[in-house]
Length: 149
Image (cartoon, rainbow, N blue to C red):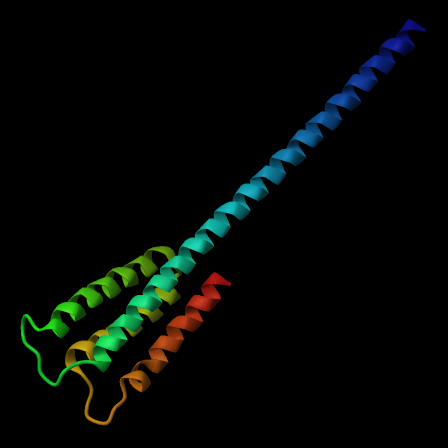
C-alpha cells in the first residue's frame, strides 16, 4: 500500500513539474513574441518618423526650386535658406539609408539627386518643377509604402 502511495506522490509530482515547466515555457514564448512585436512597432514608428521628416524637408526643397530666382549670389536670402534646406535633405536621405532596405534608399537617392539638380541648376523655360520631380517622388513613396507595410 505504501508503494502505491509513493508511486502516486511521484506521479503527481512529475505531472505537476511537467505542467509548471510547460506553463513557464509558454509564458516565455509569449513574452518573446510581445518583445518582438514591440521592437517591430518601435522600428516601424521610427521609420515613419524618418519618412515624415524626409517628405517635409523635400517639400521645403521643392518650394526653394519653385522660388529659384533667375540669378543669385552669395549672401542672397534665397541662397542662405536653400543651403540650409538642402543640408537637411542630405541628412534625411542618409538616415533613410541607415534604416530602410536598399530599394527605398535608392529611390530616395534618385529623388534627392533630381531635386538637387533642379534646385541648383534650374530647369529649361517651360518645364515644370513639379512635373520634372513627379516620377522620382512617386517611386520613392511607393518603395517606402512597401517597406513600412
